[in-house]
Length: 144
Image (cartoon, rainbow, N blue to C red):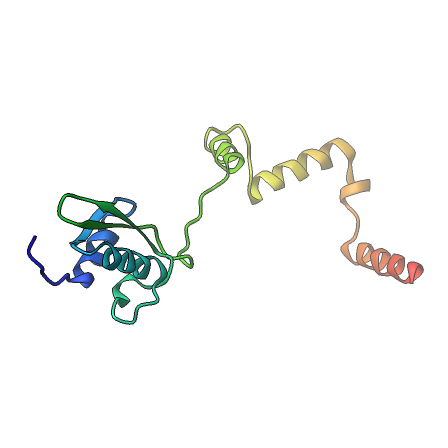
């Protein structure tokens, strides 16, 4: 095995481009060196390997070979990246909205209010807004 320098900037770019895939970074004769490099990739604590920052955005492992020890790594993403995955309930409800099983929004609220007003009359829905506020404020004062 010939010793060659590793371009960690290039290696990190390859890993970022293929998120989640384990790719070979390099092979080292000395297992201790390979373990040190793998730790540096995972932890981001080596000032000479800033290509793998921020810390925790890469995973790394070592594997013995006939010629030495291979360092493999994969990009898992930075902790501060926005990665929102909707819950199963959210996916279900969004599907129901798309199929028209559930109505939402201002138009649907207006239709519901209109149907309630038709069913229950103006006694419930026709109250003066100022009077409603006055009643609400008066009820707050009564409990204090």
